[in-house]
Length: 592
Image (tube, rainbow, N blue to C red; front, side):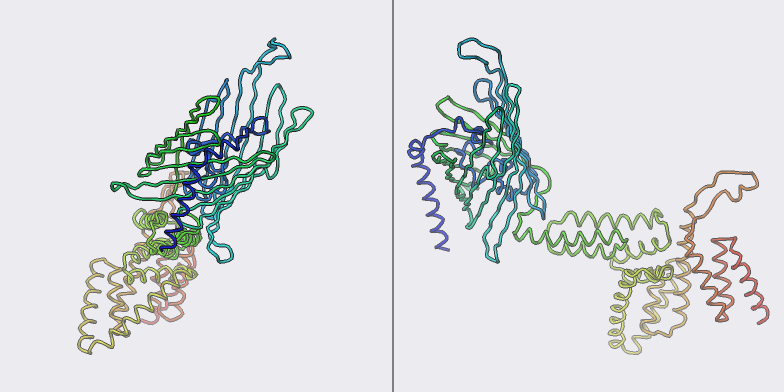
């Protein structure tokens, strides 16, 4: 710890020393960029960067990153927009508009526009005579990308990198030209608070040909370092940042830039800097997600005042490579599985995946929202009858019971559902798992209880089974009946009540299905009795019919008649059921 602290102090001392000696060096290196193609791209954008003397290549953590260093985009966590409009001199205006958008797994994308407009220039020949006026425009569009890489060959490095593809355009006196270029940049934060960065501009050099000769933008580079240190003054959180940078354009001498920022409670920022020979000052104000930055520059042509406005919006994403990012990545994998299960209408599995995300302890609003939607869908299915097939009704009842911890009730409805559609693998999986768990608990209870205690529990459970059945609580009756059977699997009366209660639940589901009525248009008065048509799943009718066949083949003619009458209740025109009822009644009369 002491070594790291000493290293931090050493870095801070070096940067502060260069800040105070910078002015002398800047004067010695004084060499303008005037006359170079694309010189306006060295004038700088953003009130914060300009207030810090343009020593910004190692900071660049806002929507001006496409201009200063696209690698800085990797440190953005929200969508952000920054705009600047500056009046320079003699009807010349410089504007900047930048937008950045982070994506969870894809890095950060950005776009920036630098626009220079010069209006009402006088057009003259060799003499003083004015031939007219003209306008000139120069603009550059940056299409940017930045990404963070915390490990290189398993070595922690905390590196971010980025690139610009830029389109340059110039228009003057009826002539226009367009060129393309590429910039690359990198940034590393090897120690807390320390940032090192470089950027190479015009690695692919834009060429503009307005007349006979083409202008080629020169290759240039930026190299910089900054250090940020946080501390408390009078119980207020404050941060100080010092930054130093050198930029070099081919065939020109290098320039030095120095910057300092003192920020109070992340709200007010005081800034100062040296931009080659220009002294700069700045003030920043941040309120929630809104930023306003002002920069003052003192130069040979006079003072300049520049203001930029910024806004952050959208969801705050964790920084790539951090612990929060790893947790969020795991949660997103649960979302992906949950969405797939929802598309397959497997809501038990979907909820289980979402609950895994919540179990990590993260503030996972998306998982909570998905779970509430599923719960609402199930409640609407049961309470408002929003279902197409009876198996959906059973499924919703099972889901609600299961989420309330009423596993016994959920098991009952799973069994009813599989009686209608035995192909539901999800339901079969959960049913098997929960039945095995309940049976294990029952086995432990059977070993623990004496015979007398067992008889008392069986009697109490059976009494409750009958009471619930008589009270119309069919599901509860089944639950108590199964408690009886876990203690005595041969208790026939409990089995009978369970079968009757299941029949009542089926009938209740069928009644709900009958309420889903679609009215037919009236044709003739004598057809008014067919005015409505009940929509019932044909598989349900077929299930009752086949169950009747099974009973008939076993000699259970009365039970077979009951099943076939259920068929006729749903489809009065079912001829096979009508004929089979007659046959079964004949069999019963013969046996009597």
